[in-house]
Amino acid sequence: MNIDDIFVLTIILSIVICDGAAVFLYRKKRFPLWGSAIIIALLAPVISYSFVAIGISNGQPNLEPDDTGEGIGYAGGFMLLVLAFNAIIMFITGVVLNIYTFIKRKQKA
Image (cartoon, rainbow, N blue to C red):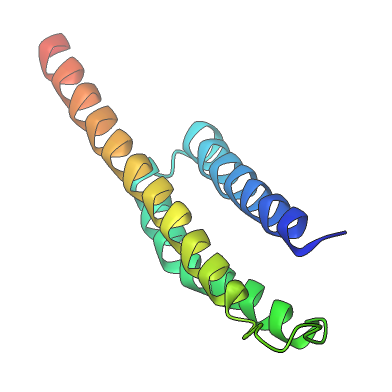
């Protein structure tokens, strides 16, 4: 398995697990979606750093003399940006849903 495959798999699994847990908590436990987004934003650097640390420790030896091995760092930074963007979108969605439910409750009363 190539490091690129592991990178894509890690991003997809991170987003599916984090978003799935957020939606489950929102529907079943009534935990606000924006709260889950804040937790995901706080966990994004941990997930990204863990990926980079594992990639560096399990890195293959450089076969070419010009290879500096900095690709894993770029991959970790990109992963952090993707997870942070996901958290921002979820936060905005959670705030909009809270405003919508607040207005809907005010109109009923």
